[in-house]
Length: 132
Image 1 (tube, rainbow, N blue to C red):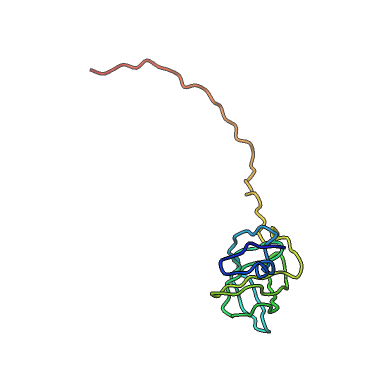
Image 2 (tube, rainbow, N blue to C red):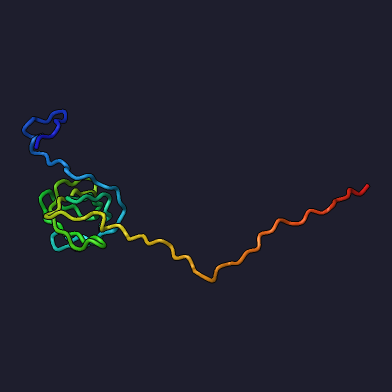
């Protein structure tokens, strides 16, 4: 899978750079994270079926195994594919359904009572006199 070359990058380097195949959605979820038997919390910043971007307090290396717990999805294992400035890119070992991570929104329940009876009649028009 060929990638575009950046300045100073050879074509062979660009060909080895992993590229996203799935669209990512910006999110802001908390996730439990486990790296090197260290359990911590991370901020999930974007999510796709194949991977995610996280903000972490720990600094894993590229290639390190990582395990995330994402609400409504469960535990997902993967590996770090990039790391810089407190953020990491994760490629999942198996694809997920990213839509499952979103809370289910249910329509608001409207209280049902007895029907309201209305008697819509036009008000009577009377004679109006101007006082002088």
